[in-house]
Image (tube, rainbow, N blue to C red; front, side):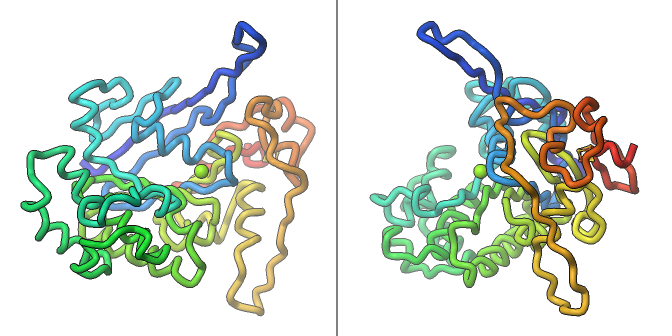
Length: 321
Ligand code: SF4
Ligand code: MG
């Protein structure tokens, strides 16, 4: 069937404790009831300011942290309760590309070992046996076969991210979660790495969950986009719909910051006032009301639900009720 991943009503709360006895005094609602459906072969972009819950969502899907509530169906099977060998078996289906390719690569290992390590963790194959395969993979990601014998510090940031991508692809996963994969790189090489990710998607028939704070990067990569604010999904739609007809006031502000290449189509930049409130003490009603240029009195009281208001385009905002 066509659906690879279905996240249903996912919640991730962290308890807040206080005092000597560390009594629980509340929750940080890092992810508060979000749902995502990923079709095979598509790229779903998850965008929002830092701290909005995008990375926590990715880490929960990878089972690096446990969900507080909700279901994560991978190929129809709920993976939130998997343990031991079944968790291990599931894990090879999903790999992650990290933000900082330097911090995520072991500086004491040569590239060949960095890339073959995930395969060695799951099979009995040796580095010697895997060498031809790993060298072929290095060529696929735009490195040279000789790079197999080098160490991370011998590479530029962009090349290190290519090593990180090779490592993520070594097990031929079905889903790749890319968490800010280019935000640590120079702007001049960002598009090279993004294009590599696109080529690899076709070559290996990958599905991507692409996480970034930068909407122009997400727009370049994604078929569909979900916009998160303070642990909530506020808008979901096709790439074009999100970019050309954003519905939520927060999405409108984000898209207004993307430079318009056509100088005749001047658009006004919407600057949001204030900072993102603490997720430990989120605003009542609509969590965006403290910064929303369109806020109405009822926005402080009523929690807007994510609803389909156009074809395949959902928004959580009382303006559309
Ligand atoms: Fe703004 Fe109200 Fe819509 Fe929230 S519900 S985004 S505060 S208009
Ligand atoms: Mg993050």
